[in-house]
Image (cartoon, rainbow, N blue to C red; front, side, top):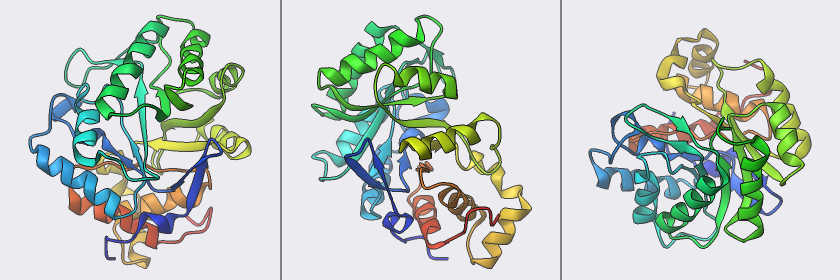
Length: 281
């Protein structure tokens, strides 16, 4: 299958009632150094990947201040600013990076607010369309962490608030404090079941976007016979079949496969040419 289809072929999802994007986004995390630490080996290539994503009609890019740290947001601004109308850049705050492949959490309201301010500067934005709590932290009450998102929204620093790495109970608690428009949890053909199935249904009912991170499981997904069968039937790759399965799984689904390769980006977007029916795999 040719890998240069349009992300628009995935259909659309509306976030927060006013941000309509194509239902295949791009996760920019891989545009950093090894261990999601430091700059990428080839910064110009990273910018080419981002620009190619827009050419393929990807209009939702997911990042975080922790990617680099700080590197990822800088590269997005270098490559794409001034941003085209309709492009949604979603970022996250609440993670600290002591070193390569090391992740810690800081949910103190003062940290989240300072992190948002820094992201605004790096991304060259006055308002972040979607700002997500990267993960609930232990060093502050969850209600205070969500309260920081509410304060950022009320002050106009962010348009919408999202959550990542959360349970259904946490989503429901957060909704009492601020409107929640998206949930970003780990989910893939090879990593499904459990509470996420209930969360996906909840997102459908509440008109939230469900953003599955790690949707291709670093290539481990290629071992699944069901996906291999779909790929053969559609003259596609197993990775395209895995993305197509996510798109068919729920109308709330907004996959964000990431890559540092233009070729793989084109392959991923090519998955929109595969049309599966829910439950067919």
